[in-house]
Length: 110
Image (tube, rainbow, N blue to C red):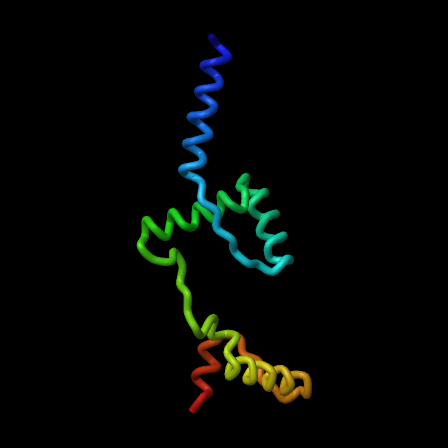
């Protein structure tokens, strides 16, 4: 009698898991996938578990739970990078100025 109960319970659980399971394929660069998997493991998660957390949070918030912009970080904009490179070249030639406080930079922009 016990074996029969275990078999019925197993069939029920398998059927429940089958109804709940749905497979989604995502494409990741191999290096990112490996790094992500290690990070997840360090947090006690699987990759699947982490993605499920993300999906759950999106559904709760009704939005992506972090800012997504087309411009990215303005620090890395082409304009800012060219200004930084030019400033580094000036400093390397001994032509740059140094300041003790960032407010001095803006005070001297007249």
